[in-house]
Image (cartoon, rainbow, N blue to C red; front, side, top):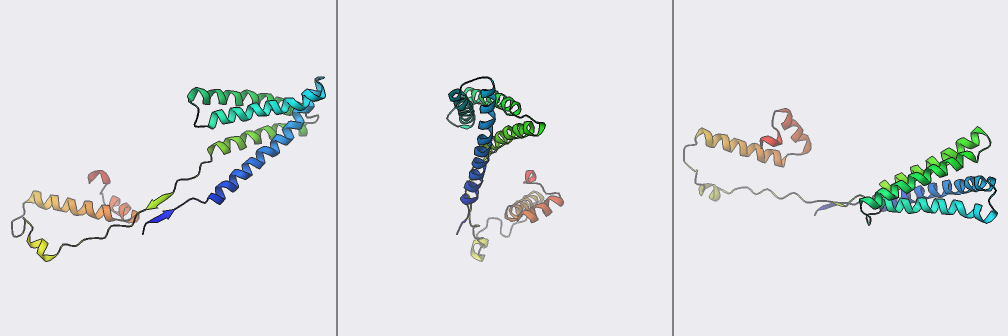
Length: 194
């Protein structure tokens, strides 16, 4: 029976969930920082509450455009540029919101962690299922089949002997385990020689 190696979906979705939680946590802190900066410019309460959502919403749209298989190269490039521009604005706002150097560093770290979580999420793909077939059983020639061989009882020429040796080595290499293949390579036999 063939051996099936399937990736762990539990691990995959757990990591996806943790990456999403990281991004949501960074979004929470970033929202407050951007809102503070917008309010400091004299904007009203409603606009200062909506601007971070619009800015980060645009970042999410850029992320989808950059990572989705539904878009061509131009769409992916546009998504990347949106993410870069929104990331720069968000970074500036998060740093400006801090009154002390520590708060400014926290604001910068918030944006960097969010970008890192987005990058990691874009790289996560479920590994394919691998099926390893059972090895084919070896078939040995019976005496009757050997006696039917056209070469039975004939004199072998040096070319025939060389070809037979080459065939034996090729069959030995094809049946060999990875460790045996490395040993054969050390002896000078390379797959290209076969």
